[in-house]
Length: 334
Image 1 (tube, rainbow, N blue to C red):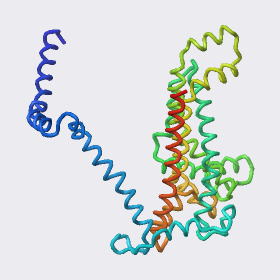
Image 2 (cartoon, rainbow, N blue to C red):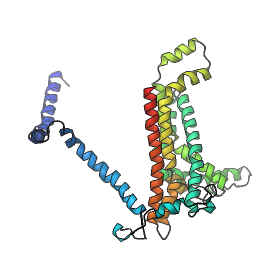
Image 3 (tube, rainbow, N blue to C red):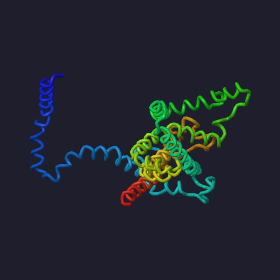
């Protein structure tokens, strides 16, 4: 485009863009005169605050109301007040290490499964994501291709991911087909409790590892290359470079990844629900799965108990968020 023509195009676009601003100018002058400059920012914040209140705070308040009421009716006006009864029912237990002694044994079995699942899944997830990020941060052939391959599962629907692995792992699936072709007996990958639990961890790691790999990769690329060149001149070993340069400078990013991975692991539901249905028995039933079944899948539907369980889960996630903020603040102060 010729310079003169480009300048005229910019002038026309600027004039068009100024039309809405000029139309709103009288209203903004009026608001500034009525509210003053100190209160004027609230006019711009109000739409976002209203959206947050309606779609975030109001559902929490509704959940609190349901957790303190009983009955099978969905309408709050037709439910009777029971106070803390739902919380007492969930927490009533003679021995918390033995779910069979609890009033709601399935809730505590789901809690126990989640307490095993979260640390194992998060540890494996971060370890694999970090190793992959370090490998893909090097100058290797087809680096962009491999980055896309590892990130691809993140773009898939959780149901698609789970159905793919069901097709591979079911009794007459592709994996047992390969074993049969090699003359080996079929294996119950998803109907044996310990195997189903391990495959639940594997599938969730496979599905989400790419997301955390990208975050760690960005963190690795923010480390100054001069430090690695200085370490190379000093003939530092790869392990010493990793422990003295990479890990310390990657610590803030690792903290964010850790908190995000923990929150995501606690909320795990869709992949495992499609993959195993929480079974066999209750071997892979997680806390969100219990909330869904109690409130919507099992008859009679117990909305109050499901709401109480979800609020207890919310308190746990709030604790992790507070921990993240405290550790992040401590890192900045150090």
